[in-house]
View 1 (cartoon, helix red, strand yellow):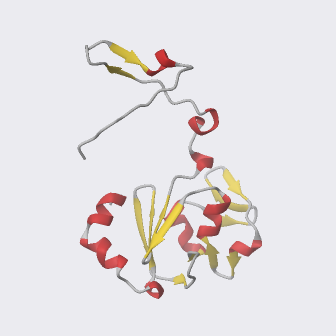
View 2 (cartoon, rainbow, N blue to C red):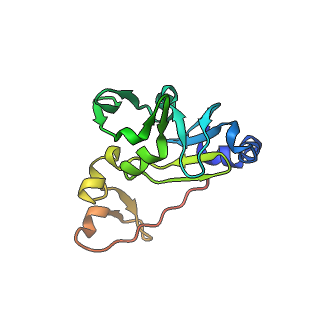
Length: 153
């Protein structure tokens, strides 16, 4: 289920009204993960380390939190017995997060965003202008460009 559909669904509304100690719902990468157990904390989301792969595909190993061939060391303060501070880890990665009434949403991690994040250069694309002439984004290299998009979904 996509994040937008979840928030607009009755399941999303019911989850938002759930008591904070009854678990949490995590939205990440168009994935909705319902966690039955979370450690109560007013500002941080502590999840069971075993649930971490379902949430963001990371697995805790001696060298750090690992996903595919990438391992990120984390301070011992982010781990407490079987619990892992997911929001603390997100802050360490400069990953955006917001929460409200038991629903936690995490943005894309800058470390896995790709070349655009490092180069600050958008991928080239072509679109027709008002007269039907094909225009490439690269035609405006070195100039400031405002790109407006719209989608009906």
